[in-house]
Image 1 (spheres, rainbow, N blue to C red):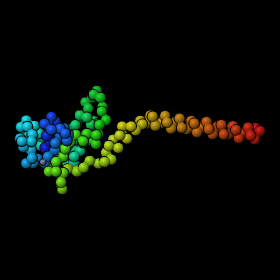
Image 2 (image 1 turned 90 degrees about the horizontal axis):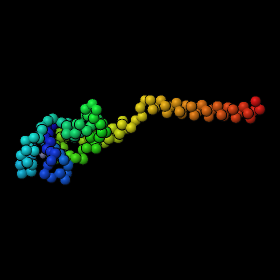
Image 3 (image 1 turned 90 degrees about the vertical axis):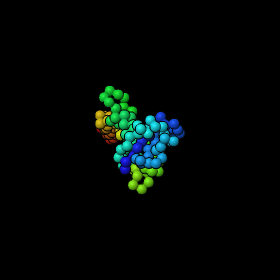
Image 4 (image 1 turned 180 degrees about the horizontal axis):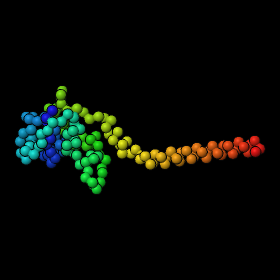
Length: 146
Ligand SMILES: [Zn+2]
C-alpha cells in the first residue's frame, strides 16, 4: 500500500519520532502537523512496517553505513518503537507486522563467531580431548605394569 511518513521533529513526539499514515489519509492535516512536515512527508509503496523503518533509518541498519563509518548493529526491531502506525495503514491489506524473530536473528548474526574463531575453538577442544586420551592410555599402561 502507499504510505506517508511524517517526522521527525513532530510537535508531539510522545508516541515516536515518526507517524505513519496511509497516503492521502484525512488525518494528515495542518491542524495536526505543520505545513512543512506535511509538505516534506514522502509517499511510497510499502508492504510491511519494516519497510517504513528501513526508509527512515537506512543509515543505522546493517549495510547502510558508508565505508569507514562505524557499523551500529541496530535492527528494525530496535527502531520500530520510534514509529506510530495509525489504523489507516495497519488494517486489512495494510502494512504487515515485523517478524518477531528478526531481532533475535540479527543479534545472532552479529555475535556469531567468525570461521577462524570457530576453527580455533575446535582445535582447542580436539587438543584437550587428545591430551585426555593420552593421559588415560598412560595411566592404563602403568596400571598393567608396562
Ligand atoms: Zn491516518
